[in-house]
Length: 224
Image: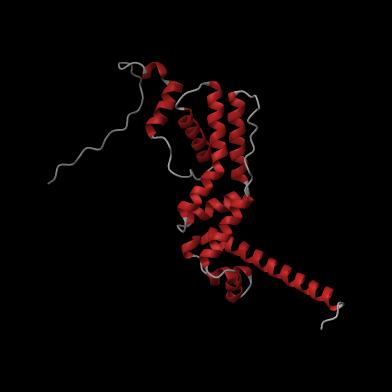
């Protein structure tokens, strides 16, 4: 029977072992993150990840049974580390202030290391891309809802959701961030948005015209 005096020592040993295992796991995740950013999931290898981490390939497999599980752990870690969007639904601000707040939130998101790593890895990898785009879309959802609410406070219209989406997509493009899943509106909605801003008088008239460059359609070359 083990003496009671040996229990604290055994507990400390277990704690040290657990801390060492946790440090090893975190180091592997860091190394894998760098490799996935550079090579993408498909070209990355467990051997390369082990080399970057400075451990054996067996150690990597001891923590993660395969490359898919390691990749998912890395991507989940990025998503969990991203800053959350916080908007006060009861705040009274002008439209310019509300839209500026949304743009600043996207800018903060874009500058976050976890967001940058996630987006760079996503563009280089095909594994579970649809799933991670959906999860990325969920992160963007509060910003989209805030844009729709801001526009609705100025003018309640059935197209507020389309305009809110277009605003968000423009901000995302300016920050070089992925657009998320398929858009809810079409290019016709984008044209209509700019017509309302710049050409409402022309849009109401079928005869009005302006001077502007027009894309020439390529002519078909007759077959010889």
